[in-house]
Length: 565
Image (cartoon, rainbow, N blue to C red):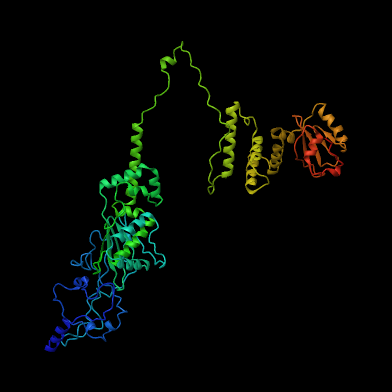
């Protein structure tokens, strides 16, 4: 090596940094701890001058806004002991650090003894790495390790990072324990801009890579003390004491009372211990603050993240709560004194001279049957309205049997009971649900839906007797039936034709039927069709039955004049 080259190297080694160095995430004059991991232990440190700092016209100093997109290996939490890029991840490291690029020799001056670089590199083992989209490893997740995808950037005007009270308690612990408000503000901005990569949570540790202005992301950890077994015992006892606490946790809610159970579940000021691979020694630095703010959003969505940080996973906690609840129930059943069994010894019961005690007084009868529960609709399941109707009918029959000792429906035939059920359905008109019910009941009784609809009208007109009048003609004795025709003639109506217990208008569209209960049941039909349908209200007076049939005067064309009161 020439003497001139040695002088140039020595002069570059002691040159001060340029005053117009770009301002990045940290002081650029500080040495990068990751650079030590890229030096070979067998080679002496190079004293080559840094032309990027000597020459203002150098490309690296003239264009600070365009760094090379080659991620360097982030240093570990202890800058004095960097991890080699090819070493496997240490225990507790949720995901490996990005690969370090090979030491570039572009800044070394050319030497006459150094051959020019070959245009075809012969070392394909260390190609130029690219920054991956995410350095997390969710495939390694388990009960005590959960990885959450990175949060998207949020609007700048949305200043709140937590909505729940436990998420706000986390933010309060961060802000009250911070030593520099400016670093907190910059960390909040990083979090809002989405600089935090996927977040991995393990017991006592939150870890993520945070992007700064440099292309290399920083490895950030936030540590929190885990709870010991005594603390977990007190916490589980507090949760199992009230079933509402378990339901709240399953609903991703944290009851306020759990924070007052004597267990330090939420962190306080100074409990969060941040570590970052950047040279900034602030507590916390802006990268750690950004991770803490994004962690508050995780706690908002799932309080089991906080419990995992404190040392136990969701499934482990739920299993422990299940066992504790079962043990509490069994212990309470054992401690409860068994009630004395009322009874009589066998020798006393079989004694022929024993006199039986009087029967106990019956229970008071409820004033009315209660409403059945609401049945939810299920795809392919029975109609919930029909189930409600059947349950209501069964309750009414049980109430009647309890009061009278007999079932009023027990003597009905299948057809009569089907008509009763269809007539008990509230509402009027053949809706889709009513048509389905009629079709089902008609198929079960070998009738048509039209027959069922006619029978329902008769049942609603007079109950079981009305249905009998519809279907069974009979010969009434002399007396009431014979006196009906003169009464109709006296009301200026034409002479009705008699047949069995029926009186029909000559035009064939109005009919009166006498029931065995002595009531006249009015019917209507289209003239000449003999298609009779029950109409109106039955009455003891045949003229009154016609009056109830058409109160609006639709029978005036028949010459009918209602009698004066």
